[in-house]
Length: 144
Image (tube, rainbow, N blue to C red; front, side):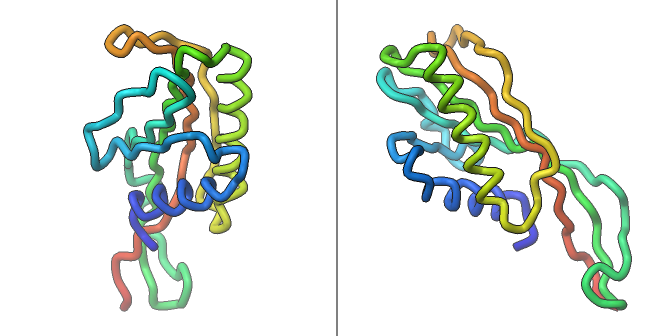
């Protein structure tokens, strides 16, 4: 696994095994446009906000003759609350998602995480919280 969409897919797939997330609908915004939140319950829209090369070319990653680039990406989960969700429930669910993704990160990609304050989106008339993760990974470039 060496690209950010594979890493994001694996993190979400592994986090969905958490029984506390059984009623959360996850949508990948990086390959679909159907991301309107439900009127009831919670909807989590997953997107890759940015990808940038971090530390340049790194040598001897896994073997002496393997070289690669280190990248940092921002993975964002926008958690929308339906009409039946209180602010306290939205906060609790955001914490559960954050902790589930950190627990699902068996490879140690997540460097940092953050949960935003509760915000309102005019276009969808919904409240939400952003749960963001800084992910660092190596994209292997060459074997010499």
